[in-house]
Length: 485
Image (cartoon, rainbow, N blue to C red; front, side, top):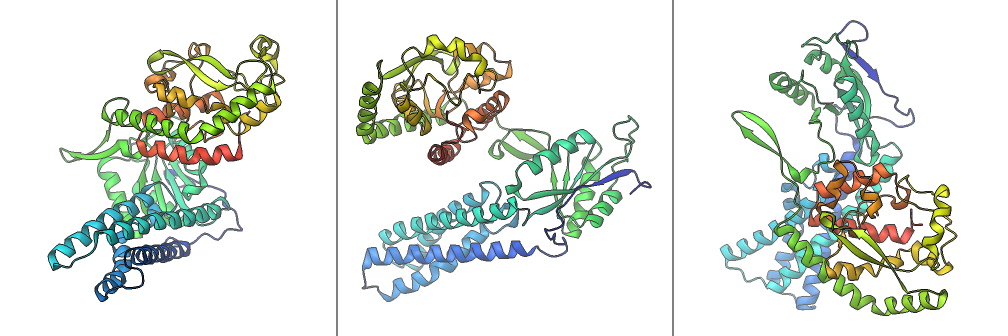
């Protein structure tokens, strides 16, 4: 260490105004969050039970249901605990915290059914069917509010896990960048350990030694040791390191070097005494996408029916606001390279395409897509409907026809597809969408590389859960109008 050992230990700057707890005891914020989560789950359980009792029985509740109602809240907390709903590893990071609550709802329903059968106790199905769903939804909403509060603290530098990153310069720097990119995940790198010869071609097999890593972990009082991809730290050496860190109460995480792959596609399978990382193939066809197609068309038809007065009103407003057609039709490239006609409410004057060549030099886009914040071709009404993405509502008919999905990559122009690199063409393995990761992550403010990266991430990690999450976030993105021009 520090000039005499085989590792460089490079401390990261940590704001002095933020107290950093020692790893020897559980950080105070973890206990506060856990008890707040338990309190929220108890409150959700009592709310679910109360609504179910009043709805099912009114004010005439029998003694047996009073007993059942008093047992359900602690049973709910117990089931959540068994589902790892209070595991500090999941506090504020990733969807596992929410999945544990949904699994708990299923588990509690099964437990109530089995208990009723074994004890031959008659429990009204209407009571159970109402109490537990209300319980789960309330718990999800309360936990979401709790997570948002934790995220606000983490953005200010509080409630963080201290991390020691171990590995060679390149992979270690990449891992540090990814860990610190999203402070809401709760990781702060306080030091990095790398081989002293790193970068000079003088590496020895034992340069990343367990005693030096442990000494660095003790010196910086870390909560987590993160191993970047490194051929020196594998097999028995990594196993011994995990044992030593376990004795110190330090968590060990290992980066496999795989980027932009979501957790559901990754699994660890034991083969011949080895723990092998298995990468599932992305789902781009088959049953799940048939379900997606049915979901898309059903929801699109429902939206068209509900929003028909708004669609008619916008069509009339576009017609009277400026001369020209109500709908703007443009050829876009869909799944598998097939062309289709995308529909939008016209937001520009009818000669917009002829004036485009004179404005290319003034583009605010990302170098590939033309965009202008103050486009002179835009009508006054067009600026307003673009601000709230109302011009895209006719694309519901594209979804109904099967040309597009509700969620997917951005529908590209033919000239954009001509500029695609080899990897970029993966975007066309699925249907383009009315919204997507690009919509909820900055829209027109994104660079071309960022747009491509988000679309490829969607294609590689698609699931119905991801679609529902994007649809939920789209409402907020449209309300704020961020990046819409």
